[in-house]
Structures are given as structure tokens and as C-alpha cells.
Image (cartoon, rainbow, N blue to C red; front, side, top):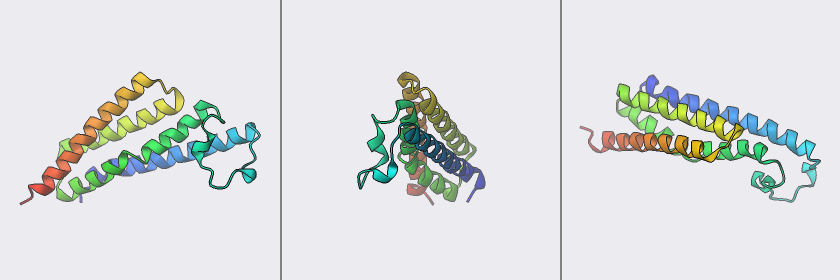
Length: 144
């Protein structure tokens, strides 16, 4: 496998862990400030139960963490397939572009969350992901 192709996936994994920590610290601080006693929460409560209870800006980090566990689940296997089949320089550039856009999207959503810019970042990264997914499919379907 080619490390150059796998490096963007590794960076996105690390970024996801950073967002998880950011979300956790922010949310616990906000629950304390709001006087929420987590030991008395309803059984089966989830983080989504805090929407409308905690300030939106606090919950944006949680929403973004969820997003990092959704679409990138397509990115990771696509990157591994491409690495196994032989990545081109274009593949590596696309993978890094996807990761860069996802990081910018995370920061934008967690800090400002203005929808037009967020949609643009999501759309461009999604187009790149479609190209990577198609590339992974082509490399395997037409392998000799």
C-alpha cells in the first residue's frame, strides 16, 4: 500500500478525535454551566437530547462530530482500495483536498455555522468523494 494515499485518511482520523475532544470538553462545560445534573438524566439519553437545552454554538461541535462519522465512512475504504490498487498523484491530491475541505468545514460549522458557506464546503468535498469512490470502483472493476 502507498503511505502517501493513506496519510490523508490518518489525518482525518486524528482530526475526528480532536473534534471529539473539543465536543466533549465544550459540552461538559456547558452542562455544568446550565446546572444539568448528568447523574439524574433519563435512562437512554443521548447527546441529541441536549439540542434545545444547551446553546446552539455548543451543539454545533456535536453535530460536526456526527458528520465526521457519516460521510467519511465512504472516504476511508475508498482510500484503502486506491492505495492497494496503486494510487496516482491525482488520487493523493484528491484525498488531501477532501481532508482539507472537511477540516475547514468542521471549523466553520463549529465556530460560525453560516449555511451558504457550509453547503459550499460540503458540496465540493462531496464531489471529490464521488470522484474517489468512482476511482476506487474503476481500479477494482477494470483490474488486470
